[in-house]
Length: 259
Image 1 (cartoon, one colour):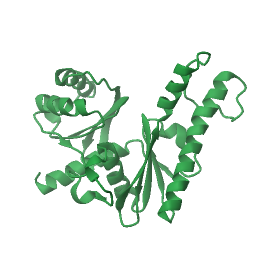
Image 2: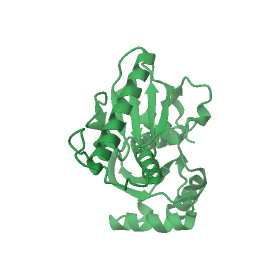
Image 3: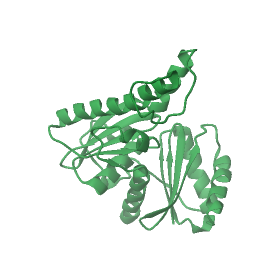
């Protein structure tokens, strides 16, 4: 079985693949201070909760936007399962990732995994909107080349900034208020955050398509994708586990190449 780990700034998505099927998936809070031992102790109960043992893991792939956790997770997986994790990057993705980009080394591992998976599942061209701590938009042209994208503050990041600076506004649940004109403060905030994010994503996608010069399918991913995508006029598909799919593909490419 293949263990895949996507370490985000706020949450870490962990999955287990049996062949091409994602059999298990968990989302846990990211803690930048965790050591390899703490991550190993965190991972083992997750596996055991699904009647899996460390010995069931025969390979691992990792994407991380938190540098200090990249090494910690690599060591945790090595200590727990005895396998060396493939760390996703423009280099390790090999032939799966063709970039028309000045410095491919600076492209985040999550962005690489998203682009690889989107091209595999939806073909080229394709645009990915990843709703995480940051809202990332990745653009792949009709030749299958990663051209770049857009990075903006994420839904929860923007909301947290609002609540921390506006003393009379309290944090709310991010749900669909079902109408744009809020009838109370909570509904007004929900409309602004949820619908505002959908409209912002649409506006940025329109700009990307205009610059690209032709239409492309738009795939939403990330923990908040199901909530936001339903209010978008440009998003054509939702794939919450897109990054994990990309990690599976990158792992297969690396092992095929004998790296």
